[in-house]
Image (cartoon, rainbow, N blue to C red; front, side):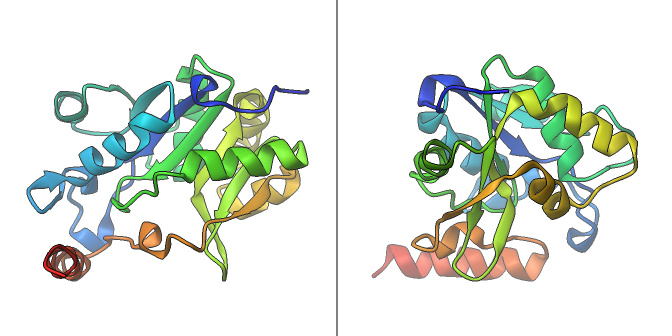
Length: 207
């Protein structure tokens, strides 16, 4: 199926905040604060200018996420915290645009050119999606995907597949070079990561 090249008006942004956050003690990572703001707010605000609308994928605390971001909140269709592919499927099902841009809630420093860079890779290749590459490896939860992949993705999930890289390879999703933004790929997975990022941001603000 062909889909017109993505533009801001044809992309829905999705903040992936549906995980269990085991290394963060099981707390809802989207609600963990960095410099006084929940990480879900950092990501939603970064995606906002790049897309037509923003959704939050969360499997708990929906009202809190909605109050913080003003965005609609959607849960996975699959029980048991099935991973980012399940969140992407929920986002595709809810989106009213032909394209879905995803970013994780635990990487608050989203580049302002994420959507444009991924869209350029899609336009150049004709692929049904693009995924960020940091110069060394894929960063699979930073992706732009055609929503017509939903039926295929649901079938993949129903078959028990959860490996995101494998699904991308089978669908012909192409890499996009985002190595100019290494800070975007900083994950806050533990309390120590949170402390390190807050210290880094303080240092950056004073230089």
